[in-house]
Structures are given as structure tokens and as C-alpha cells.
Length: 628
Ligand code: AMP
Image 1 (cartoon, helix red, strand yellow):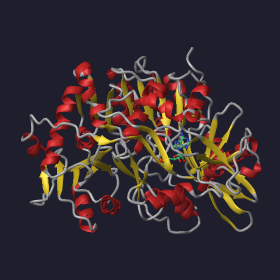
Image 2 (cartoon, rainbow, N blue to C red; image 1 turned 90 degrees about the vertical axis):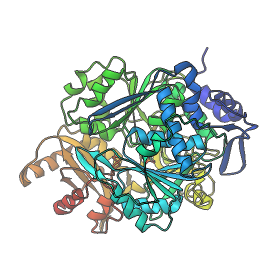
Image 3 (cartoon, protein in one colour; image 1 turned 180 degrees about the horizontal axis):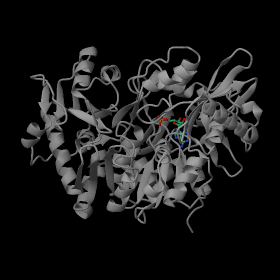
Image 4 (cartoon, rainbow, N blue to C red; image 1 turned 30 degrees about the horizontal axis):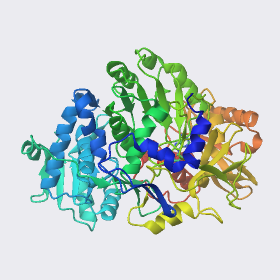
């Protein structure tokens, strides 16, 4: 009989090494590990010590014999109206060409390669080529501008930067080369070479000696055969900078062996994915979800993966679902924010497509509010599975492990702690563990973090320790900086960042609870609640809401505001009622869809909103300011 999920989870903690030794059998090792976990120097965990492997080998080479002609990468752009499918064999050849070009530009094991690219196949070639060579990639989201790029270049000190002439968003071409040139002017570090992919979207000024064209270089290496470089399991595979609120970016460093094992295990155990199936993750390669579930996990599992450049509603809100139909997508992975965008359109755009291949839709990155979950569940008639994780962890901390044992969904909960994660709820002031159901505490993870999670902050071990492991009094435990609560069955509910909590007249309120309530109003499409300083109550909750339909005039706004407040009064109590509901046409968000709460809060409090380089549309803040 298969184990119950609870037994499975228990074993992953109590018989940690035996559990992970079994999971390690899912990947190819050049040299098998000598030790499963070395935790002799906490909080630094060293997984699969002595083992040698290669991420690219596990993602590509090992599938060639059995699945060589099978689809590996399906690159679709509704921005350039292009679509190209690469089999495992074709992708393998392209990656070797890219690896040969990188070698010709001096890249060796341990060197960093910065990748600043749109969602095109060459970005995937570049990432896989890096890990093939044992080089460390550091992808910078294509939506970042020069300043953010420069600070990341200075921190990573890459030997090579790979980029493209331009990205495109909603038909608007964004030239990357001038941004890159400006970043290179701003930063202290000088990369030896820059490799540019020319999509023919924007003119490029090439700097002789430094800049090279991908097409020309590739032509010289068409038959390249570049063997995988075996690396230690504990060697870094990549760094990824978190969209920090502080000035200096924080490079989350990931290992090789632990990450490969964690992703290899996640596909059958969490997602129920099998070779030959198709995974469509709508994130961006610039984010952790993109690294893990656009690229590495589906390929390690021998699946095809869809790389999509474009908006979810262009040419219309049916585009993603037509891709599901055409490529018989089995697994879809997106974010609640994207669903809320779709929610403004007719559900018929989704349901008119044949979605019979699709097993489920996983959503991550932010709280999944019940109305959004209900809407999409009805629109596609498939299971909607919330999953909770962070850049730091690289794979889900909480979700349903349906591959272990089918688990029921609970609206508002990303599920139970995933195997390997020893999740605790901690009282933030005493550091004590909260074991009772319904008690709210800081979500923390007892060390060692499972395989695949961050090893350290790039070149800053002390920052890793101080930031993540020392925020809770009296104990060394990893803080997620999220509030959580657990029910009697072990299902967790995420109540927002510890830094987003508001305290109104001595009452602690989660902005998430208020948001969910307001979002249930039929006319509200999206809402953000922030705590702003209030002379009388300490803090007051302020709500910024986007309506589903047009809302013209002060009178209409006032009427709807009163209606929303009535709803909060009725659902949560007057204590949670926001002092105001301000209607705006859009909420300030990062390009990855994260709400910029601090920016809203700062503007509402008349302060400088700080670094807005990750913001999708800065005009949105001006509108908020005008409406205050
Ligand atoms: P990032 O590292 O940018 O992916 O952000 C991680 C943070 O996003 C977490 O610490 C949570 O605050 C939030 N988050 C991610 N997934 C979820 C989820 N399923 N439910 C609630 N919050 C989430």
C-alpha cells in the first residue's frame, strides 16, 4: 500500500538521509554521493557531498536515447507571431552550439554568465549551455532597466553577458541593447565579452572587440560537440537576484546536485508529470518559477515545455487555452494575478477550447483569493492547485503532493508542508513554536533546508545567516517572513508578509483577509490593502481597488466605497473596515505581477516610494496620488 502523505512527510524529516538517498536515484550521477547531507556547519547545508553530476546532462543528454525525437521546447511568441518546436535532439544540438560559442569567448567552469533576455529559445540555450560547462548563470529579468542590471553585474562579475536586441510586450518593442550599454557604462565590472541575439526588432550598436553576434558565431559551431563538465553536487548552478527592497541586490545561490534531485522528485511527487507530457508555465525566465518550471524540472522529467512570449489576453483572452489545445498541455502553471487579468474577460474565451489534455492548473507567487480560484475553476473545470514558495527555496514549500497521495483542495490554502520541509509556526516575540490549530505565527523552516533551496547569498555567507536565520529570538531557524496559520488537519494559510501586517487600534489584521473579503464584491476585480500611519489608531487600512466595469464620477465612487465597507463590516467586522476605498484603474505591480505594497503605502503616507525600477507602469502611482 502506498504511504499516506503524512507518513511520507514524517519520514522525509525523521529519516532524512534515507529519504533523500532514494530521491537521488531519480537522476544520473557521474560519481554517486558519499554523504547525503552534511549539516555540520549550520545553517549551511551541503547536499549529496562527493557526488558529481551535471544539470544539463540530466535535462537533455540522458533523454536522447529514448526520447530524442520527442518535443522538448515549444517556443511561442505572440509578439513576433512565431512558433518553433525543438525536439530533445535539436535542443541538445543548439545547446552544444551555444556552449561552444561560450567556450570560444573564454567561459570556463565556475565563471559567471549574465543572461539579460526576453522569452526566446536562445535564452534557454544559454542557460543550459552554462550549466553544461559548469558555468554559473545569473538571469536578470528583461524588464529591469540599466540601474538594476548594473548593480547585478557588479555583484555577479560575469565573464560574459548574453542578451538580445529587444523584447516586446503587448506589441511595444523594448530595445535591450541601449539599456545594456548604459548598464555597462554604470558598472565597475567589465565583462570580457557580450553575445547578442539579433531578432531584427531593434537596431544595435555593436562595440568592436567586446560585442559578438550569436548568428555569426553559431554558424562556426554548427557541428559542435561539447561534453558536459561534471561538477560537484555542491558547486553552484546559478544565482538569482531577489527583487529586494534594500539597495544592494541579494544573489540567491543554488547548488547543482540538490537542485537537480529536488526538481526531479517534484515532478512525479507534486505534479504527477511523466515523460512525453507537456508543461506550460507562464512565468518568465527571469524569475525562480521560470528557472524551475519553464526550464529545468520539465526537461529533467523528459517532458516538453512551452516558452511563451506575450500577454495572456493578446490577440484575445483565449490565447493560452488555444496553446493548451494545440499542444495537448497536461500541466499548466501560472500566477493568480494573470488569472485576475483573464477574469476581466468573458470566461467563454477559455472554455471554448478543448482542454481535455489538462490535468490541473497550479498557481503560485501570491495569495490565491477565493473569488479568483472559484472563477478560474468554473471557467476551465479543472483542479486549481495553490502552491507557496519563494525565490530562496526554488520549489514549493507547500502544496498538494498528489503524486504521493491525492489530497483535497481547501480554498485559501496552498496545502500542507511538502516533504523535506520541516515547517513551523513561531511566535515572533518569544521564538516559541505554536502547535495549536488556528494560532497565527511566523512561518519558519527548521534547518537543514531541503535539497534545492538556497545555499547562501552569493559571496555573502554572513548576510545569509543574518537575514534569514537570526530574525527569530532565541533560535536559529529560517524565516520565510510570511505569517501563517495551520488548521487541525495540517493545512496552512498564508496571511501575508510579516512586514505587511497592520495593527489597527491594537488589533492585528492581515491585509490579505481584508483583500479577500473586498474581492468577493461582484464589482471588484482586484484590490490591495495597505496599512498607513494614523494618529489615532496607530495604523489604518487603506484599500486601493480596481473595478471590473467602468466607474465614472465621484458619486458612483462614493456609493461603491460605502457598499464595499458594508461588505467588510458584514464579513470581517468593523474593526477590519478600511478607512477608505480608493478606486484606481490599475494597481502598481512589478513586471512579475507582485503588488508593490510598500510603494502604495509610501505614497499614501506622503513618503518617497523608493526604487521603482521593477514597476510595470509608474503612471499608476501618480493616479493613486491624485486620488488620495
Ligand atoms: P518570490 O520570492 O518573489 O517568489 O516571493 C515569495 C513570496 O511570495 C512569499 O514569501 C510569499 O509572501 C508570496 N507567495 C508566494 N506564493 C504564495 C502563495 N501561494 N500564497 C501566498 N503567498 C505566496
